[in-house]
Image (tube, rainbow, N blue to C red; front, side, top):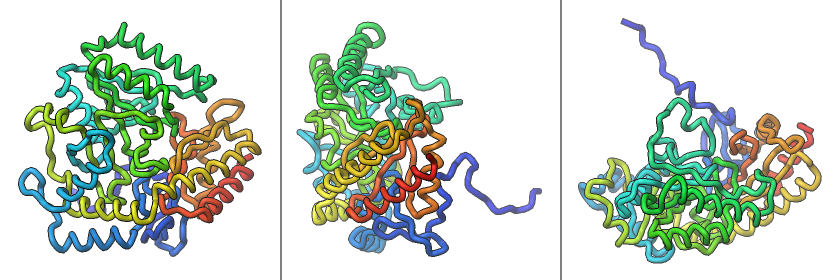
Length: 420
């Protein structure tokens, strides 16, 4: 019989920072020693209304006192009904039916399953550099880095990877990259996956883990055109880019494209675990009976927090603030790019912005790591992404002010100097 020992977190969970949080307040994390850290990670884009927004806290506290858990295929509760009505108003086109889960990866699994059920076809086209989750199906759709699939082979079949118009990586103009990717997509339909075998395409309008690489209007229009021509479905993964983060409520609206399926999570409930997969009723009802469900999806407290999140976004003009502060952030980062050759590219939209760190034209993840560590020592929390972790990503809460953007960029500038 072994002696009792205290447990600890898995060693596979690598901490990006050394901060141990005591509490959160707006754009700040306060650690256990009372130090304030300007949080430009927002829990990977989750705390859209800032940490512990009073209205979100009050809504969650009130709901906890009434009903914490009402499993939504056993009983119905008002928060999920009210949230569905509100979210339906925000959805593009005729999308009006919602399935709730707890995490973005579950929304991806649901979208994939719905595509296959609704069309009767097996294959899904995804795009190189995309991230859709860590569970088996969603990981099979993910190509942003091998860390998510290494040691997991063989992955789920029926996934076909097409190129994404990452003009900076290719060293081409946006026009050249778009032409290439659309030609290759047509070649894929000729050689790898017949349109008659292809249920649809799933794409992030801005790739997240892949390096904060935006799509463009002509590319997205090309996807829509091909889906319409071949009776395929277009699914858009708005898990990280949605809910006002890019200066519009949905990122795909920057590209004037109409999706058939929308996935959302992260900023949806200001930190409570909640995700959704949404589609028009006539598509959703083609799913097979029993194909949607789960114990915790649509939790009553999470739904109450999501309703309060919508209130705050609308009342405080956070979509507009994301557009304004995002433009200010990009201007500041572009100015640094002009001074520092290590910044190869500044890209993104709104408050989803990435700065790619390079050395002699080659991605430099080591220097990016040094930069974010120095920023942390000066009270600024940032994360990295990209296949070589070479992109410093900027994801502040949507309540961020111009003064806080300036403070953060000034710290970043010092880190650039210190690592030069």
